[in-house]
Image 1: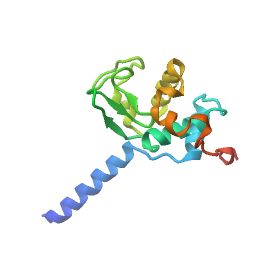
Image 2: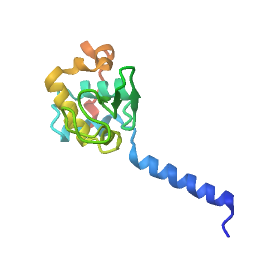
Image 3: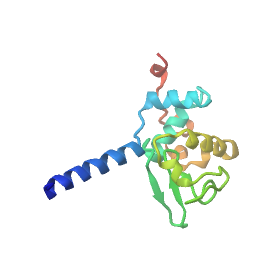
Image 4: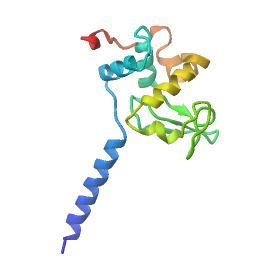
Length: 145
């Protein structure tokens, strides 16, 4: 018979392991390279990284519930009111919002590029307050070596 404490410990370890595979806290240089490989212009990558840090702290699992009964999802904080739908594909990006909470941010990047095409960086309040006019753009010059 398995001791109950041992069973609880194993269960907790399994849950933590499962949870950690779903989300990722991105660092500056790997994120810069990922954005570059997804056709983000290198001249804008510092702005994108600043936006990501301002909106989500570079945490792919961040979900923010808002007063208007919508929520913002993932590393870019993509909003469910316009860009995605909860529990099914939809919105202007035709995505399930929960797809933006995983550590694979390829679909997040594609949706963020669409938001940028429609509204520019000023769509994101975090970028406007922390990044606009080169306020706090990260130095990524060492990321390409």
